Amino acid sequence: QVQLVESGGGLVQPGGSLKLACAASGSIFRIFDMGWYRQAPGKQREPVARISNRGSTNYADSEKGRFTISRDNAKNTVYLQMNSLKPDDTAVYYCNADIIAYGTGRSDYWGQGTQVTVSS
Image (cartoon, rainbow, N blue to C red; front, side):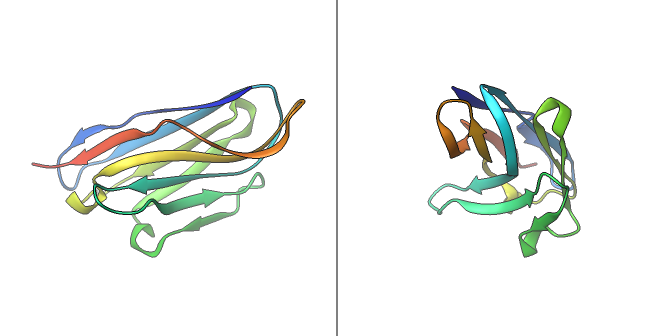
């Protein structure tokens, strides 16, 4: 079984920074793309950033220049460094990963989410 566990959320003032982490664990054979999504109250879940297993990155337009996604393949962990945070960034942030697991094949996995609140 595979689990994704996020950490690093919390309350931050506008203009501040937070770094999220998501560690994948379990019967993992290979991890392909990893990414972050977010869901604000009353809105649909939306993509934030994505990174391939070779380090290629993609960002939503509103996050370009403020957020940086990175990963440590040795630790099966993906990070999201968020700078210049705005109240509109308030949401639950979810980790996502495309994983081949032993015995179950290739599937899309999600973390449980971590709350990020940007408020003064």
